[in-house]
Length: 148
Image (tube, rainbow, N blue to C red):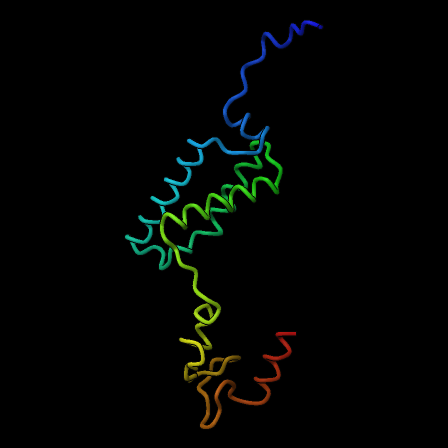
């Protein structure tokens, strides 16, 4: 067995370095991150800076992922961990995701209940009598071409 003299003078790896090597957050570090994210979300809701607890989901996930990548984690492991941390935050805050219909405010309020339109979906002008979505045929065509 060879004796490594260089090993005597190297510093013990930090907790973050050990976390990065095994690509797993230490329990106390994860709890601290979750607590901070919950506090930030609650404060932003109270102050009226956000309207829903889902508002910071992308920001939180991207920030956690980028910090972990900068600490030496692989992108996929960092993304999976960030997703798990955000999921824990949302479970603590009891976030309920809207269903598909609730996510379509221009189209429905409840399943099958249509919202009455007063403006053209393409240009925003007032809808003429008898028109339900577009003010004219050209607006309908332009909107359809934009979707292609």
